[in-house]
Image (tube, rainbow, N blue to C red; front, side, top):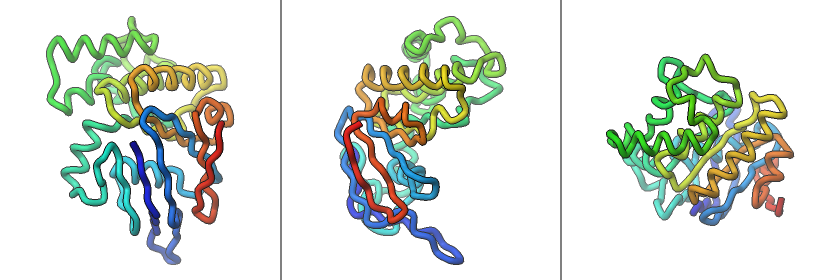
Length: 224
């Protein structure tokens, strides 16, 4: 599902800084892989490359049989809208939209509307335990509820890939445990492949496999 082949990413200086060097990684369909490592080793950069938000300086990135390095910017945008779901540390829930409207956004961007889209949103809200909060505004939700909203939004359009960047970083321990379990459950239920960037050992323990990015840019893998 995800294949990185000898990927390198260097950012301009001064001095120039290489955060990924000759990285090769394969992630199977349906696999949940945690990416861990010290700050500055390229974890978020790797997610951005898989999402097509950034381009490597060398190597190839293939996701769901699509060679991202061969796509122009417009094609990458279409790829993300259809095939990728995002869960962020800061939630990124739009404050002026209701919970249901936030979850509807990926469907709206794909041109889906009407009763079928509304039913899908209701299904996802129920699945994340927010079946009665669709009309609520984000300011009325707790941090855990905001992240559950983000999980519903990430999966509502049935993406092939879910990318989660420190999804529990702004949550208290109890909420983090609940959200992590829910993320894994919903990713499994929707048949998605998930890359999870985290500093949390508890989060990494829920993954099928742990990938460690080192300061040298090398990738080491181990079973969780």
